[in-house]
Length: 534
Image (tube, rainbow, N blue to C red; front, side, top):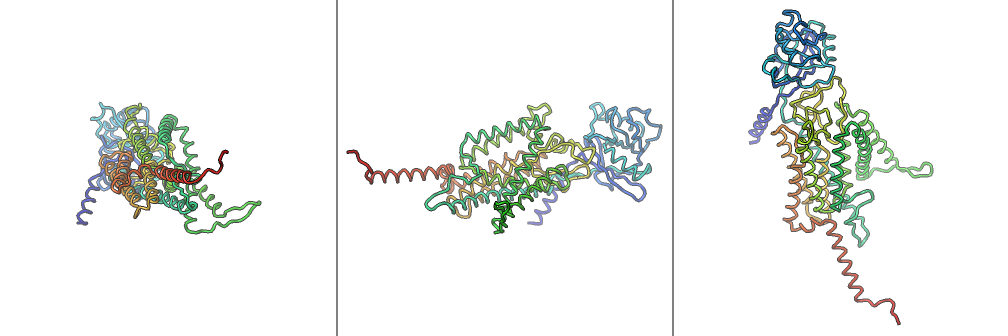
């Protein structure tokens, strides 16, 4: 049975492949070989899917020409050969028709501008029969420097599987962060209860620095603030992106310090206290602070170095989400329902509805989350933009977990599977509340926490399945919110604790206040007044 399931999954992954818009230019000359990035349009350019099946053509260098007319080429110069020309002065379709009429088999267009998916006019669509592809001008110069004029080329574009194992890495990161954040919140609540004064109760209050969401008005104002910020980011992205980057560096460094300090405290590491200038200092705190600041500064300096900086961004992002889930305490299930429902509407509106309201038909959420230049992610891989130089052409706000796609061609630029911080934090607040409720009620085996965490996992799986089948990015909250809310409510209803689960700490405090009032009334009834008027 397991063997049949494995064969079925492998066959499914092999079937779910798409033709991307990035290709590979294989150049050879003598005993040397080298490969370069190509961008083409699979809708009208047919390119081999493997190097072995690709046809070898001699390359003619006409990079001094734009090839906008037949006068730019000598008779029979291009017959049966591939040609490279410069971008500009006329359309891609015009260049392709001139090359085709001259007998060329392939046209490569060298560009010192960002490479975009080439297109032709409707009238030219059926007339262009040869492959049309763009390459970097710097790559063309490197090829001629390496191989000289006697070189041959092959064009191929291996299909990219829709499923990539980076999705499993994203799933692991999200599950780890939600699980640990919820566990940390519950553990902090248990410690607070254990250290409460004798006869007192700490439910309903938070530690210094923690923030409790207990008012529906506060939740509505919070969501409204998020909407305003998202719209401002859309219209003033070029300026506000740097504000967000600075805020992220400060907040993530603080969060990483909080996480590492909690780990050190749990492991019983010494504080290494010492005195200096008449003040007491903690050596451990200073070392951790220096480490966290260094990590945040490194990310800020090298944030566009896609090859490895994603590791630091994910580390800082995990710390940020963990600290947020531990610091923000949702007081009851009612607030959870209001918060998650409003954010679900917010997510769906800015992903699915705003494309009908924007001039370019792009989602405001996707435009802000991925940056203005991520055409490949926005179009599901149907259109790409590759920078002419190996530097990022635009800034991206650090609001997503990123893992490089293992099976995607990364010759042109690295491609990533992503997950927004909100898709971790928002359901994570409910998971954290469930664990705190487990602590308040001493529920066996952390039933609420475990059930909500499993529901989050199932919601993530459904999100990825829909994304793979539709080949489109999905607003994860559309699936995570119903899974987690309905599961938590079902557990509370099944255990007969819905009233208590709904009211949360408010219910607890009302209980305590009613008990105190009853005791005071009974005391007043049975005792005589201390003074009497005569």
